[in-house]
Amino acid sequence: MNQESRPSSLFAFVLTLASFIPLVSQSGEGNQGAFYRDGALVHFLKPTEKKHDESIIMIPGHNLSSYLFLTTPDGRPGWAQAFADDGYEVYVINDPKFDFSRGFDVPGFEDVPGEGAPPANPSAVQGWQQDIWSRWGFGESEGNPYPDTQFPTDHFDDFEDHYPYLSNATTPYADAVVSLLEKTGPAILLAHSAGGPRAVSAALARPELVTGFIFVEPTGPPTESDFPALAGKFMFGVYGDYIDSRRQTGRKEAVGVAAGLFADNGGAAKVISLPEDYGVNGNTHLLMQDRNSDFIAELILDWLDQPVTR
Picture 1 (cartoon, helix red, strand yellow):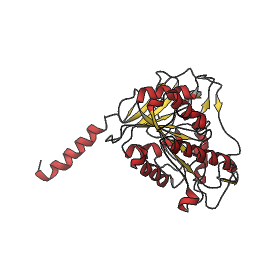
Picture 2: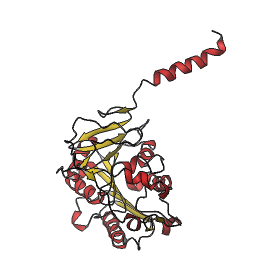
Picture 3: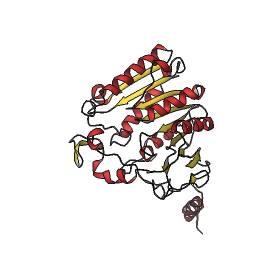
Picture 4: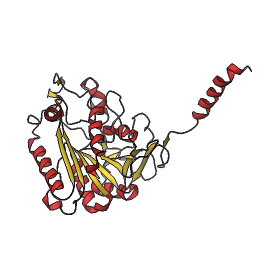
């Protein structure tokens, strides 16, 4: 063998060897994978270099699975990857009532662990939600997107296909979040929509394990009765476009009130509106799946890096 051929041959050998190293683990080991915790399927990503003491626990909204944070309808990496790239350990938890016995086909996460999984429900149906085009700001009616919509509506079928199947499990979602917190240790809870009350309930149950919240157009943000239990923590809220037509005005105002409560109780808080504060139009209720999702993730990560949040 001549000298010039050795580097390429060695490189080929390393690539061959690497092909035998599993990237996904079902047992909770490795850089990414999945496990069950109290009947709830949890997907995780671990950074190449961990830079933060807290983990991030992402809580999808009503009848939305971890697909919401792992990928996008047009196939881009999701927020889970963005936060892992920033050095956070990321965990995305599913509602315990979801039945994944039919599989989960997000690339890199296709293997669903068997250990800890609840019994399959052959009669389970998908938890599809009607009228989301107008309610979530995709367009005036199904199949008629707004001209400036940020959601990749040309890939809507992929989003629709990933709605989870619903079982008859009875474990409360918030209890599963508490159980995951007890495994991960201190964490920031990133909650979307109906994930808001689940995040708040979990934090009230184990306040010492929650350092702060990221609320993405949530329902049920903290109220005065949740303090002083949540005193000293931080919150960041983010809103998209078409708030009035989506009938989100009251919810947005409630998040603003919550921000004031955090600030008044020794914490830090900020709420942003993409159209009002950044001149960015067309964002939907699914900010983490919109075409500019990376930009929004960077806004959140930049704020988390500010000393005021710690």
